[in-house]
Image 1 (cartoon, rainbow, N blue to C red):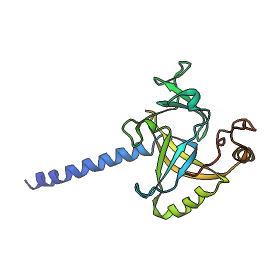
Image 2 (image 1 turned 90 degrees about the horizontal axis):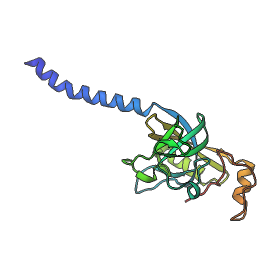
Image 3 (image 1 turned 90 degrees about the vertical axis):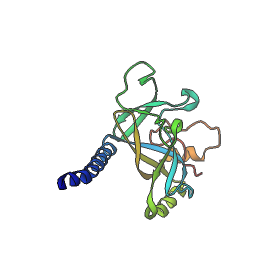
Image 4 (image 1 turned 180 degrees about the horizontal axis):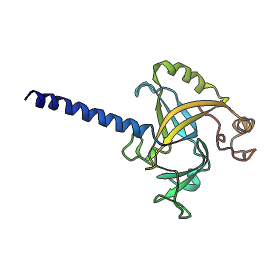
Length: 193
């Protein structure tokens, strides 16, 4: 009888431990990609210590390609060279995609999950990150972890100086054509919300 009570008490703890281990393994598995971002909101006090941003997928143009339900990532991880629109899990040409990302319809942003992202930053890093976000001479890069099922999670944020082409594009008059070929980790100027 004593062993039965001990087993009855230990079984739920073992189950919770197994669920935690599975969740941790899932979170830490996958391919990491560096995705440029724009349109930062360093801390939304109503939602806690998060940085909110818009993904700036290289090669994707919403006006040209339409609304996003999935993208195929191409490049040598972690360097993302291009993101191409997926239709029913395949590239427009009908080829399968080796690195798909898809909208998480159960996620925080649902259909905007490939457009808008957010990353928990914690109290200690918030002030430092807020200063970096204000610096218009830097480009934000978010590292995402993409899994085989197409789900992905933003896991880190870093900044790099703008290239001369990005500075010229940022400072160009509105409506001016880009001065240089597309740089996958560049293009649109850093904007503050």
